[in-house]
Image (tube, rainbow, N blue to C red; front, side, top):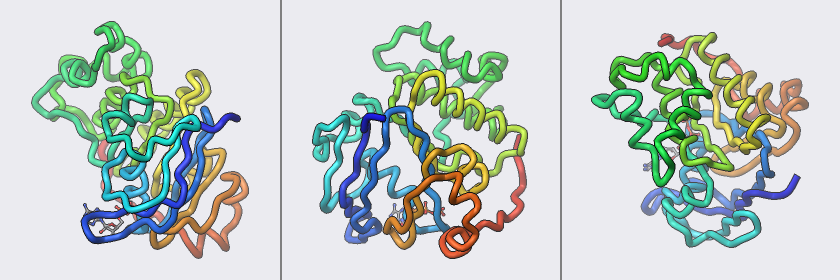
Length: 242
Ligand SMILES: Nc1ncnc2c1ncn2[C@@H]1O[C@H](COP(=O)(O)OP(=O)(O)OP(=O)(O)O)[C@@H](O)[C@H]1O
């Protein structure tokens, strides 16, 4: 598997606050990796740092072997990094289709049909306003809009948060197809540890802003010692939105 993206000794944070301490890892072309850890350890900050959205202090970022440490967020997005934030950035007053059009850069409008192929449910709701969508549909829209940029690496920040199990399954299946059929590499941050480890080939564990484990996801799924130590495996039931 050839290397797509590498973070080397990344030190980053917000204003004067340093959150990540010398975080290093690579992601191969088409690889599925999950990043897990307890609340507040810096998982979202890692994704934001990859997108160039945090205060960078030291380290290096390479994309296909090229040093892109100094590239801004727009350049990183144009290179092929797609980011779906935890906030599901959907324009509530625009329809599904208008939200997708807003996500087009130089691509033809016909690309929207491609997004609908990933999430047929969005086609059925193309005329509905963003605010009329369920949580799951908003997440699909947020992912679909990011996919219009044809990313080679997709960063997903807790895409399953607050969603019903059936919707979680639908989303995870779409992510698996994306990886298998289009060879898109995926870095998944997720609190639903079982789902994340079942999806990923490799797992990274973050603790207090430092990487404390890197290894096969299938092995980690059965390593209760490591999971107990670094990851909260007890999932608190949340109010679900379909
Ligand atoms: N914009 C910000 N400004 C200052 N501090 C921030 C900001 N965003 C996050 N932090 C702090 O950075 C630390 C790491 O937060 P981050 O959201 O990256 O953790 P996380 O592992 O993703 O947590 P969760 O699982 O709860 O989403 C926390 O202490 C948080 O309060």
